[in-house]
Image (tube, each protein chain N blue to C red):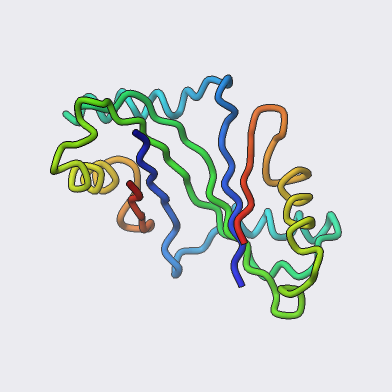
Length: 80
Length: 80
């Protein structure tokens, strides 16, 4: 099975990459783009032997906390 | 309104970043992770004046094609 972790910069953290994308879209002639934020889409393939483990959600949460996201500047969302 | 573009490496393209994450998770003691793929989560804030434009979906598609994704190695998915 596949679990997805979405990692976003916290709202109060500046996103220079997103700003660069916004400016580039404007230059390319795309109108109406007020802002762009760039985050990460992390897809984790879980072994069959583990996909029904009762603590799977908790472990994914832990992975995100310890490795996938930087909790100081990023928020994450785990989707099973 | 917010539109989301998910960008993923094509299945046949190697993902060294994802592999590094997988190995790191293993080292940290997380079992049952067979593979990891890292993509981009791009959130685009659309101006009110443009959010009901009939061609919005087409324009987002075009943005993804021309700027947000590299169609040679990446697939994308636009969510409105």
